[in-house]
Image (tube, rainbow, N blue to C red; front, side, top):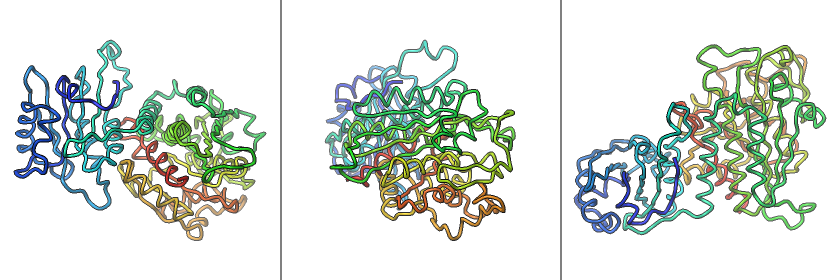
Length: 494
């Protein structure tokens, strides 16, 4: 499936399948701009769309009606609710995603999604939602032989004025689709080495980006003991990919704070020696969703936003074997702190702790943002639609939540309180254990605090995004987090 943008009227009327997404008021008895649809689609399609829209009740999340137009063109009208709740995004992004997924565009040779947005600023969220609804990776027999479906996205305000996506916004959507493909790729095809190779190829295609890779025993030489331990027994060695962009000598003349993006890239999670049960291990190819998100955000920012930026991509497969790290092992982390292992399935925080410490202490970042499919508890706490945010800084928390509303990658803040949560990791032997005593005590905040503990004292401003549920829905990658992190960094750096 190929995604394109900025369809003109000719493209709208010549598409094999036109999906029109508009608020219910568009089809009401007193529409504010009664001639807008006719100018966009032509009289015949507009009349048919009005009939379908009037006959369709939106409910809470919207619904669709479908008919055939002249010449066999398929027309689907998605009626969006006029109002959203105060914690949703005014762009109605989830409704756009849901109705796009239901419209059956994959069977069309040439499709157009026309979204009427209340404000031109909603175009990015609408485009992000349409993209998220259209997965493209398939291993089904004969799938590659089918004609490629082209889906063009066109956003207009209710009066018919175009709301085009900027080149940067289009790149954000493209990076989100790359993240979707990474998450959907089978784990034997996307092991740490393959993920690193693909990431470095993408990074080196962006002018001015410098890339290095730290692999296997080299991790110990760089004091990245957590990453090394988690992945050391897998066939593909653990590694950390480090990229920098727009760095100036000794920090002179830099614009805005130096932001580092850190991602958990567990390409498959068996649970380690605390082996996951059947039903819990399936879909663990998605445990690198945070890594895919930070990679995509970095690529879009490095190309379009000339501010000091770093990427730390921590890659490992949590496998089992004679060399696997064990319960009761004590690891020395990059921070210098020691961790007694009491749960080998709490491995992602070991990667993030090393990655965030490296970003703060070696790369000297002012702001560190990490993203990870870190806890199942995130889905319990904030659900499928909201990622969880934990931060030691009000401005970072606000930047992430505001970016979420603007992009449709919604998130919600959870408590940051080391004095309440750090004691959950008490160890009689080491500085801490890696898993909590009480699994009912704010697990998302506790897991985040484990990561924060390893940058505490550096003075870094830190934000954590747990996107376990939003990054993988309906057994498919969503690309969640790319637009969110891109938007947040934009706000933090100006």
